[in-house]
Image (cartoon, rainbow, N blue to C red; front, side, top):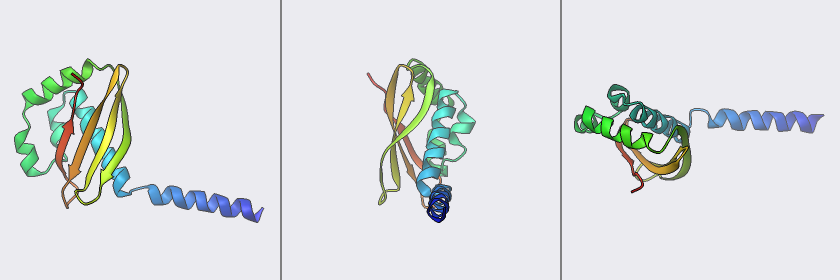
Length: 122
């Protein structure tokens, strides 16, 4: 009985520790940007971008990228691949019904998206 209770507390503690972690926040933001691109919503794409990156994004670019993502089918979410803590950069695989595409997101010191790149298959 005591061992089961201790195990339950440990599992709960581990789950709570993962909530709000930098990696979880990074994936949530990367997924939000990818969904916004897929949905051709330029305002949502740039809402968490830093000022420098926000200036580089045009509505036409978002629209073109959205069209290309739709050719990969329905968006099914991201899978974590790796991260580089020195660069504060995370790599994911965007999953679609007809394929995948790598997504790389870098964050500034304030937690804003400083770079977002999705590489589409040829």
